[in-house]
Image 1 (cartoon, rainbow, N blue to C red):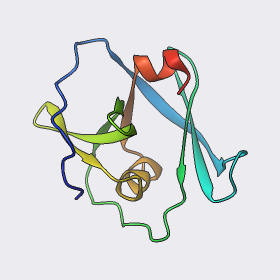
Image 2: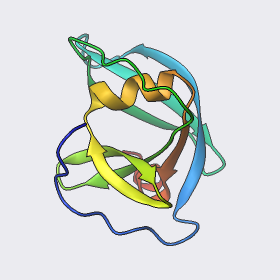
Image 3: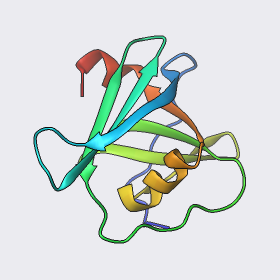
Length: 114
């Protein structure tokens, strides 16, 4: 698991919306990036990131992820013990998302269109 870059406060209730992965495709802007396309009650949202050279296998079990705007861009965090755990690298988050985890996206990301 990636090192924790900084502590993230547990968000206020309602600041995240449940997202559904709708499409995975090559990023239209950069061929070496991948784009995950989500839908949510607050609107659509896309996450482009560098295509991992090596994919980390998804751990077994059901997982919940939150996607937030962090210090260095968009970060995925596992929900651990009803709180936000350490940030994951995109190569760790992508297999979890593709394997059907429960992703939640920060309303701030959707509203900013990031």
